[in-house]
Image (cartoon, rainbow, N blue to C red; front, top):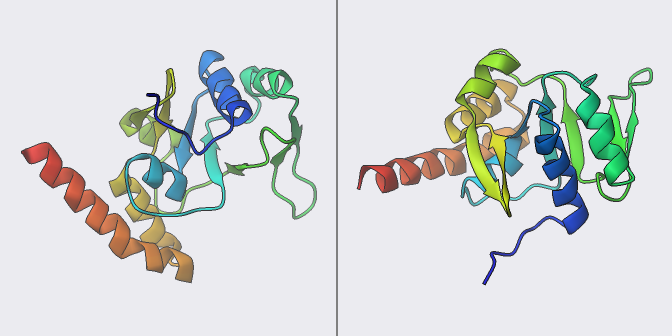
Length: 156
């Protein structure tokens, strides 16, 4: 029996098209932590791209009837459309190194029949500590426990 996903078929299709188009991106934040087994909840999926000008992004958006909305005044860039409303564009990650450095260390997570890159738990923890917002401070103990649990599982 296939494992159920929290994503709709169209949301999965968008991620699959990004991977198929060889768009350098990672899932970051608590959604990345959840994909790695951390018991956390989030309202969106944060995507960190190497470059928002990669042609594969627009191609993937077209495939799912989504649109890129460029930054306007104080509004950050975003995606619009039913298949991409769940996704937020991340421009920077507090406390982390460059996209290229973090991408090399990213973990692969299987989503259906394709893999996506996700920021590893220990790097998510670094970012949450550096951001130091109240909501980030609340997740730090959970992330530490998830990291410890993962390490115990691997060492067995």
